[in-house]
Amino acid sequence: MYLNDYKVGMEFPLEPISLSKEEIISFAKVFDPRPIHVDEEEAKKSRFGGIIASGFHATSACWGQYVHLKHDEKGVIAGKGIQDLKWHKPVYPDMMLYGVVTITKIVPYDDGSKGTVFFEMVVKDEKDELVMIMNSSSLIAASEDVE
Image 1 (spheres, rainbow, N blue to C red):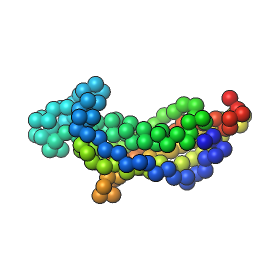
Image 2: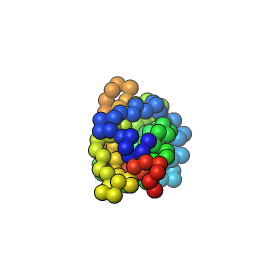
Image 3: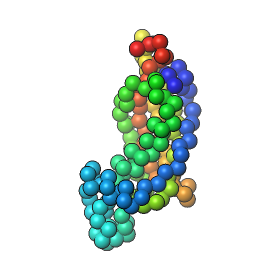
């Protein structure tokens, strides 16, 4: 998709995803080595009662499901940023995550070559309870003819 293909309100359901305990620990050992993410005994003593995924791991995994759709592969130039990210509920091993990405805003550049697309990713669990919300934006080419 290119900028001109996006419409505010478009929704992209994501394939459900879960993170295994091994995946959670492996990610966290490198990127977020807190005991609640890497040490089963310490995590059991925590308020969470066991290992939970790093919020950044869960966010990356869910956003990866959007990227795997590949519909924006030709038009996306680069991510611009995350405007807001909130984790509402911990992600436990093998917990199913269901996401939807919605286009919330489109801002074309004055020269017509590209624009910014704003996304909202809402992720819920198998009980339909909110797990996280991320609002982010990407720079998108207007069409394949414009560089």
